[in-house]
Length: 197
Image (cartoon, helix red, strand yellow):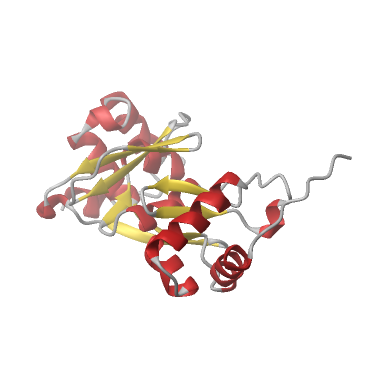
């Protein structure tokens, strides 16, 4: 067995332990400054060293995924892709093809997490996952539910809203065929009154 000696400085340990103690999987530069109570250059230096040591990964500028101690010394860790979205954007729900897959309304497994939002947001790649942000008007931004997992919560379009969104924007679900197949596969779970409202 190959062992690796990774030394962590006092500020690195303080940041890692505090963020993990707060049960956060994602933290920001603001969180790091709050924990470390030091200058911005010192915080950036600690962030740089932790990235280099594989203890954190940058999701986007100023937002980081904590690689918890239980990931081992290799630091290999994968967060559920849906759970990162609330840390990236505030007004959102997982939708379109991703929601079709989540609700078992398609056999297709999209390699993209489609995110509906009212805010403009540049698409993002993190790890093996691409996040595509679809901007909707406030009038069309409704019909989502909060789903709970052991590691956190996320917003996702309801079955009915998933169908509506896919019919309105078929390019984000693999085409109208996928939306129609979704209706057929979920026909026993769909509330057709809600669907027609």
